[in-house]
Image (cartoon, rainbow, N blue to C red; front, side):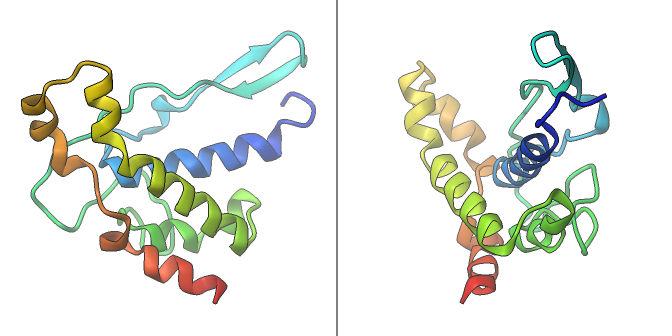
Length: 146
């Protein structure tokens, strides 16, 4: 049984994780990397904290996730994720805002890595994992609210 009042927020969080996986090329998004934990205070199951996210450097411009995410199956684009946002209980405006927000956060990945002690060489080794939102469909997503 889900914790009272948690289903909507957990569905939104799952959508955010899916978009994040797209932005960081985490193709290790299988079902065992999603879990639920018992909340004693809420007396029900809640989505677990995020874990096992591994940005994967890649050369290919077309990328795929492990799980199907939208109308185009496993294709790792923001437009594909947005195509099934309603299944997560999201309206178009919410969907676009979530994607924009995550794209802005992920864009700062290098500063965060360096602040946490990663070397320039280490950052360079994983740089191709972090995708530019405009290259993977942000314009298509933003057009949904125009």
